[in-house]
Image (tube, rainbow, N blue to C red; front, side):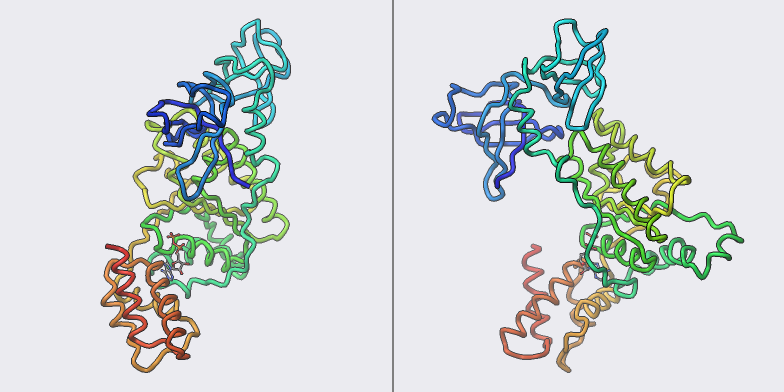
Length: 406
Ligand code: ADP
């Protein structure tokens, strides 16, 4: 089934193209509604349109949900009751109150609510299509599974290079949490580092390290994809953040082992305050309150990952929050050799294989690139009908990867 989302038209570029603002504030170019498909003559600025998400094409507006509806940053809400200028409203995020509601607004209407929870405008006199649309694409019902359920086979030994990272997580997380060290940790009054920030380019092993940490502490892993959280759950992002922490806390209580909450692409959730809109500020505030509320919780370790460390709100990096910051850089030759070896695992290699030579030829490759080189080399071996990977397989595969990069 195709996915739909709602967008507010911010510009009609031509008969065939529209610029729309998504509910997360992002602007997108979409195809215009083909006139025959609808009774409407044309789409106008401010209209809310239903958009079909198409993976291989430009997304396409397929219907108009409401004319001159809500503008970006406003949340649609259905009025349940109104009293003394305050309305009780239902949004995707549950029940809430809205102030500064004019006298003519009554129960059953759909209104646009500003980010500060004040009345903005009337969208329609009855719950309009947009409400159906939002519940259709909303995920409130099919609650998201943050918990990572797969078996985690990686340990820190399966991570090449990154010695300073491995040392830091061993010293600050794994050893203090080891039950054998419990008494000693107590005597030494060791304060655990609860928030770690992994920063560096994509494919350098941040997620893999979070998995390894989880494995070492025997815990549960919760992976939250920042951009997905913000776009898919727009308007209910804070609730989702609360939920994931609650779930993580429960898991820790039940198992007696810590939970790891891994926020991938943290920058998308917590941009610097100066650049953030109201909604983003609320998300940051929620995140901060969760991070600050740790002392009363069971064991939760939060790991944030980003490749844009300068694009993160500084408040999040203060002591007691993501205060251990670890850089993930592209691997040096020695680390590249180790990553190649790790990626090969048990796969047999021919006598002519010298991983140091491949490492020397793969300058600027990330760990993910090197893992891909090895995978490709295995395919080449299969094609050749040999049961071991030969040097030429690795060479060809590395050269192809390099070509793809340029
Ligand atoms: P990131 O989270 O930094 O984008 P990942 O941890 O998802 O990167 O890495 C993707 C894949 O690349 C891993 O599953 C692994 O196969 C490989 N990889 C990356 N860095 C390393 C490393 N240092 N050691 C071993 N494998 C690595």
